[in-house]
View 1: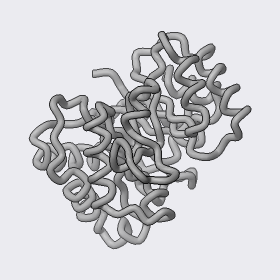
View 2: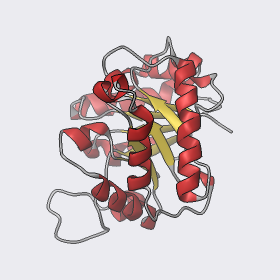
View 3: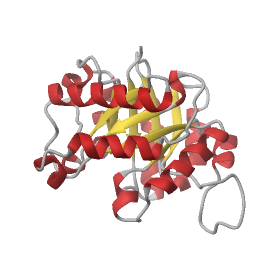
View 4: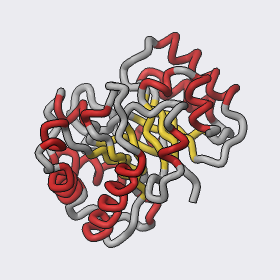
Amino acid sequence: MKKTIIANWKMQLGFRDSQMLIKELKQKIKKTNSEIIVCPDYLSLSSAALVFKGTHLNLGAQDCAIKASGALTGEVSPASLRELGVTYVIIGHWERRTVLGEDSELINTKIKSALTAKLIPILCIGENLAEREAGLAKKVLLNQIKNALKDVKIKTTTGLIIAYEPIWAIGTGESIIPFEADTIHSFIKAEAAKVMGKKVRVVYGGSVNSVNANEFLKQKNVDGLLVGGASLNAKEFSLIVNN
């Protein structure tokens, strides 16, 4: 199976810088054995769709609304994203959980909404430092899996991705040991399969860069990477992709 490499730009770039990065990625990432998904800011989705059309670069969004249409000021319809050419959507990122207060019920609804629009959800899960130090990581992950995927149905194993992002490792420069990540990924795959009746891909995110990416990708149960800060530099991201 191909490895899946996801770039999450968050809200880190201005509009002009985003446009430059879109073009640079098209130029630098010519051939790869991995599946590449780029999730720019919302303002840049349209231009990215045009530039990436006909290339091996897939377009992803950073979030979506709970339904296709309605009186939801400021939200973005998953159906409209699909119409634009978006294939994937990140849901339940820790920043939306902790900063914006999204709970498991809302995340579950968004996943179902995305699937209805024929988007592939990228569900983010992860424990914080206090939970890790208390030995509660697996319990926290299990609860997140069960709650986010309650009554969720997918037709094939490629219909959903889980991104394991230990919160304590995101943006800190301190990534988890690759072997430990492999063990946790194995646990996540097994538990997700119990809930959904199908195996799904599990990717790792948390201070990933061109130096450590290959060690993660060597692990049996690590199906790819979710890259944050390192995806904002075309050269750095291309090194990760071509690792």
